[in-house]
Length: 332
Image (cartoon, rainbow, N blue to C red; front, side, top):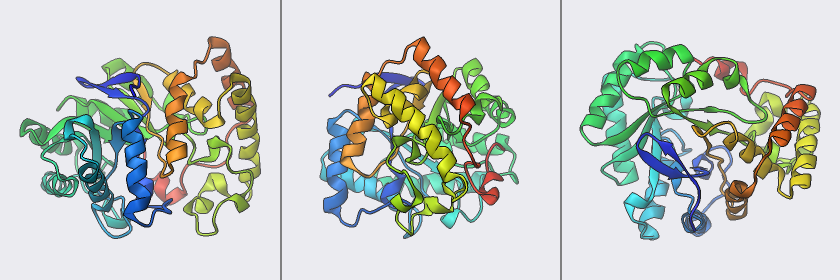
């Protein structure tokens, strides 16, 4: 199956991409190879071949998610060049700190190459900006990896517009990954999306479904397992949940009128924000993955987009996207 493509640097990548974090962190109900291999096969067969991971995604230590992807590629006998493989460095185990010093950049890349069982990474992001290390030093080290052929494209995640401009003076930044959805539109006002458009940088939206909220699957907190980490997040709190359900119900009504699911509408909205914008919805469920891929068939008119903006104005999302301690690690 062939999907539409968008550019990241000199590469054409199929959309939507796929966030793989949930297999080994936060959301996972995957227990065995028999559980996860069919999902990877479904993604590949559907043409969904931009796979996003990070070295820190794992309950069992660094590299767990990367190793799982490597295993899937090997067991399914997928040609390496068929997958646009994205990973990240900088966040330390358990997200207990950030490192962007040159020595660590090289160290982390070698570890990821080994975990992914590959000799190159298609897109290598700095996961979070290290406030202790000048971004120029970090990006210079990333450029060394690129010059050595270990990395094809460079990216930053959750950086500020100012940091991005500084980074671009050192090397070509091909992608920026930041949360963006109907629930989270701060990138439209803090300058980062504008800078990406100005400099021709691809904007990669993570959590484009509001951590699942925008799919319409959750009508109350009781719909989530008692140990689901989302229950600790501000937008899923007892106070904010009912308010945010109102917004989702409006999205669901519009989706019904368009003949699609709420999640597909939310993803189509992301792709309608410009040719330099793409989304990487994450899931561990085959049926959800195929639903997400179906978003490319949803065409939003100018009237649809205006109506969505009207709803966002009337039903502002309640709560920040992260707790206070985590908000301090973004837009740096």
